[in-house]
Image 1 (cartoon, one colour):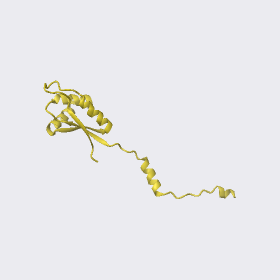
Image 2: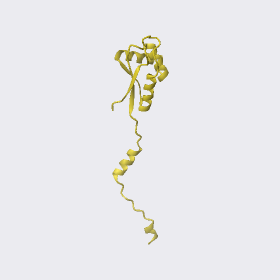
Image 3: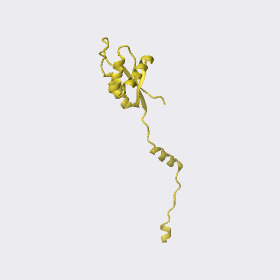
Image 4: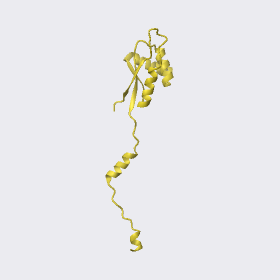
Length: 119
């Protein structure tokens, strides 16, 4: 065999499906998003809601008041949209926040749920 023959490289055709699959593999997948929903009731004051949102979410008193007003007027409010694990944590923190000491009939925390963001 000649030296020229051994150094010749023959390029194999690349299948288009392989290229597309390789490109798809490199794209990062985004985790599904979930809303943390706070539900209205008559056993918690605006002060309680504002304080809870400040302590649990870091919201300013102004933002807390906006959310407290929305939950009071519409019956529910989205507090946060995040990953499922973080949404579960925030929901659990709301559920464990405790009763409103400003309202004697209050027996416990507000109600909160999580729900997937529609695609």
